[in-house]
Length: 275
Ligand SMILES: Cc1ncc(COP(=O)(O)O)c(C=O)c1O
Image 1 (tube, rainbow, N blue to C red):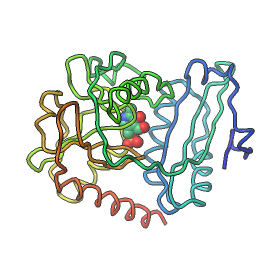
Image 2 (cartoon, rainbow, N blue to C red):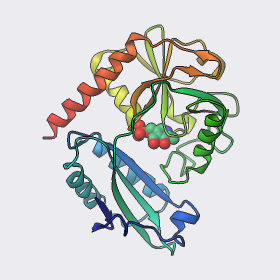
Image 3 (spheres, rainbow, N blue to C red):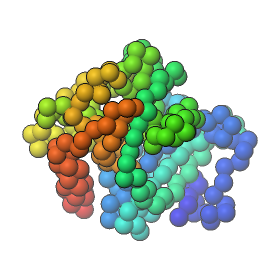
Image 4 (cartoon, helix red, strand yellow):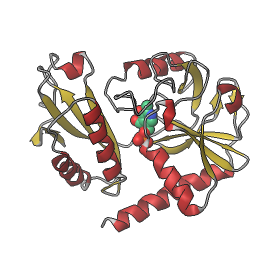
């Protein structure tokens, strides 16, 4: 099902004119929300982040209530997959359009390997995220991120692990990372200028509820080689094991299985609460 500005259109009509700034400048923002048996996990958090991105990128008069209603209504028809919503600047800087569509579930490869690469365009902790307005907005300008994925693929890895100029781990091009050392779970701090991942914040909540030891920290690439386990976090993945970073091969810590299962329980609990 496809919607443009709240109106249902056919797949053939679901197009953005090339002259729209969303296309030739990447001037837009987006969200992706996972569907679990017709239920959109973390919908309010996604809408809140979407509204923040809109505010940071000067998209005004967006009806988020209507977007939410449309997302809920379409998602209720599906057992799994994702709802995607994009706000794109139109042909004129004062116009914008809202595009909503359903995407089928992505199946990730058995082996997930990362090549570390410096991210020259990334704020990377060099700026005060409260002072510099658009750090962390979920904009559609992903060419830099995806270019690193392409490079990693050409070098035989599944994806890239982005580092700041000093070699500290930031995030993946489309995911957040976490690591486990001596039975403590770690996630990176947001002052690094990384996206405020909903999956990361859910893991923090899960750890509080389940009394798991979780710390927010940052880690240098040389130190991540020596941790017990690394995992990727995102709406599409929840938590998946990272088999290898550069030359370093990891074993999966049993705590990661617990994290994966706790996501299933957490989502189920939220779904029942919102029924
Ligand atoms: C750069 C980046 N970091 C992290 C994430 C994970 O965010 P979330 O957990 O909200 O899906 C994403 C997801 O698209 C991303 O693009």
